[in-house]
Length: 244
Length: 244
Image (cartoon, rainbow over all chains, first blue to last red; front, side):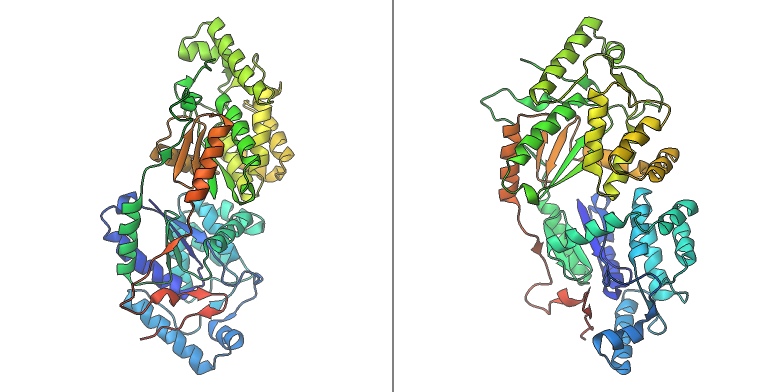
């Protein structure tokens, strides 16, 4: 069974929702047969690299919050994170483009290190002092190497803005097609969706329901009234010879 | 709706089956809403790069065919290809590792050129005189550039055997999980499967059936007896403020 999670590293509810989902998954009896895939969703897709501002300033500027309201919102999110055992800096965090991080997450996927990198990026953005948003690539290089990626490969991706750009855009188009307006957005076997950082028990129910609905592929062929062409195929033991 | 096609460039039935599927798709009323994705499947995954031999020799050696049987098999496949309007060289083709081609197809996917490259590779392998199997990378570089890929990016992938290797292996693991023992193997919305180069009308029926079964995601939440947490999410207009 496959669970796809659309999220953004800059999204506090994604950070919290991921922990809640993982709590449910850890207790799910069939967890070994659940594949989890990260999908890209930028909250601010037009934002330029290096266009960085403090989160509190962004909240005031973009949503017209007073400084007091912005701080209270961050305090609330910090409390939600703390309830999941997550560190969360409620003051002094930055906001900026996450496009390069999503591109690196696609590189990481090719090397089987996506889950590691995503966790490291969340931790770095929400819990650590050094900003992950910068004109310079050094911070992201360091974090990606920590996740087990090859430094030269990471630098090559960061130096080429087209690398994995189409993969990020394709994820974002798919999110729109699936009806996701916000993140986190969880899709189980392309059949069930869970929107938002729901409590762990909602994820438990979703996993159970999707698992029960999970059916093997239904194989279609030409029907019983004609010769089955399913063996017009090649396998490790060679190709079928056409019959006529 | 998404159709995933597991196939190998060295597989004659995949070449024929692709044409049959595309015939059905071209006449399918909802074709604009069908996304087609290539998935990797190597018929001979252990084969070393540069380990190349003529197809006819391979058929005799591996499957114990007489030279006459091997030729007749190729003639038969050539006739099936011709019936779909495909060129097919029944003599003098080579066989070898397709691993690098699959790695390039994953690179091409990131740049939105996968369908182009796959078509070019099939044509080159089955219809053209110059072998696509070689210790040297020059032929593959030429074909990938023809498909619209950047030459330096192609060379970088070919020079690094780890690049996209995990993507190829992941596709192959998924094929096994879905029960595919041979190719071509078509999976529609992860719900219906079609094995082998079936006649176009089988694909038409499969597309129609999968389209009718295609349902929007069913969104799950905490149920009606409690506050819906679906808005514990972030979107382009900001993050919901926790209520407590």
